[in-house]
Length: 181
Image (cartoon, rainbow, N blue to C red; front, side):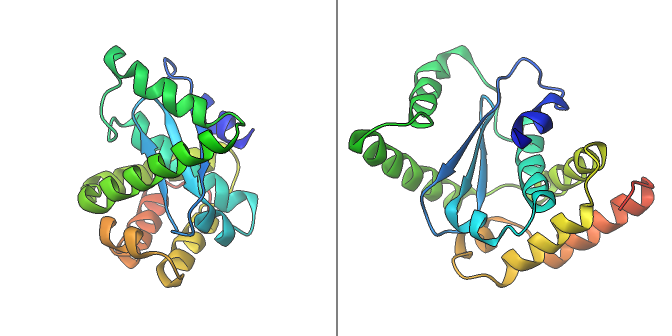
């Protein structure tokens, strides 16, 4: 429900955003081409309220909206169909395939990460979405601070700019844009 509310505000209305949970203790979230958003069990375990969840999902939707996850092309439909099937309930086969896909996605993000500018842009866009949905951007900032010191954040630390830099940039953006905090 929360994901669909965020997706409704996305300029990428041609996409049907899908949200899934990766069964890993790693603390992270990922945006994939075609509007697929994944959050890990480890990240969910740190979330204390709805506003924090909105912040994380808004950040990932923003990556897709800003084309940071690449452009969706029809030739990717087979991969997208596989991901969609993994988001549906299934048996052991789905769990095994999901675990393999999770590891592959995690390894890819571990090697590549995102450019610092992409994270800053996604944070700014997320601040706008958070505000438009009536939530407090300070909750997202608080979540980022928790991630910084949490166990299982090795991929996050390697693939993202320093949390303090991101927090400062978000606070400046919110202030400059006169967004409600």
